[in-house]
Image 1: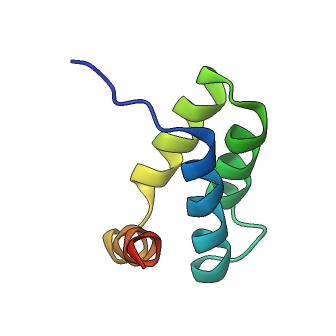
Image 2: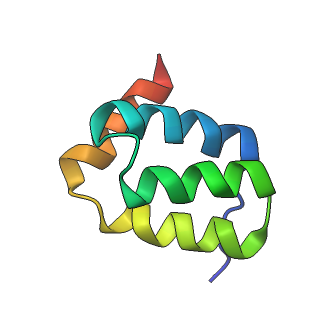
Length: 68
């Protein structure tokens, strides 16, 4: 199964949305911020895994904020 790559700028925007929803010190927010800054594939995988572990409502709210 092929994993879609997310560009660092999108991860940065997602980190900002999650900082508003979950808080700036939340593990997922910090992982997304680190992945956006480093651009590392391993950081991106870690951030993606943490994002998928969020409550569905939090994930949906963050994605909705990106759409605006």
